[in-house]
Length: 315
Image (cartoon, rainbow, N blue to C red; front, side, top):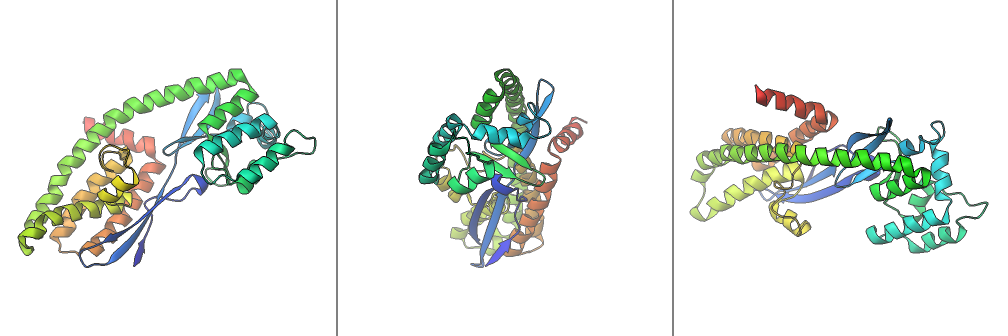
C-alpha cells in the first residue's frame, strides 16, 4: 500500500479529510488522502474588513468582528462574550444540533458556572473541553478565532446590532455574486471537462481496448474515469454516491470550479500517459501529484487565476 500526497494543504481545524483505497489493474491498493482546504475571502462591513474561510460552509472571523469594539485586544472581547450564560446556552444548542460528538457533561458544567464573577472561558478551552466544532481557534496563515456564520452573527449582534446588519448586508452581497459567478464559470468548465473526456476515451480505445477481452471493455472506460476521480477527489463515483446519497449527479457534477479546471488537465495528461504505456499505478501517483500542485496554485491565487483564465478565453 502506498500513500499518495494530499491534493490540498492542511489548514488546522477547518480541513475535511477524505480517504479511500483505489485498486488498480494490477490489484495494488493505493491509499489516497485528500484534505479539503478552505478558501479565504473578505467582506466589508461599513469599512471594516471581515475574513471568511469557506469550504462547504462559511466560518467568519470573530477576531475581525471583535476589532470593531477593541482593535488592540479582540481576544478579550470574545472572552467577555463567552462568559455569558446566554452565550453558553446558544453555543450548546448549536453544537447539539450540528455535532454528534459534543460533550454534554462538560457543557453542563460550563453552563452552571457561566455568569459567576470568577468564570472565564476562552475559545480554546471551550473547544478542548466540549469537542466543539462551531468555533475554531488557531495560529498561522488562517490564524485567529473563527466561528460558523450562525455563531458569528450571534456574536456580532451581542457586540453591536447595527454592525451585525452591515456584516449581513455585505455577506449576502458576496453570496449573491458567488452564486451568479459560479453558475456561469461552473457550467463552462463542466462542458469543457465533458469534451476533454473524449480525449481520454480515444486513448483508451486505441491503446487499451485492443488488449482486452470483449467483456472487459466497458470496465476499462469506467476504471480510467475512476482513476482520475480518485487522483482528484479521493473517491470513485460509486464511493461518492454512497458517501453523499442526497447529492444529485456524481462528484464531477458537484465539483468546484478549481477542481473542474484541474480535471480538464488530468484527463488530457492521463490520455498521454496511456499512449506512453504507463501502468495505472504509476499514472495514479503522477496524476495525484499534479492535482495537488495545480489545486494549490488555484486556491492560493483563486480569484486572480480565474480572472486570468477568463481573459485568455475572451481573446
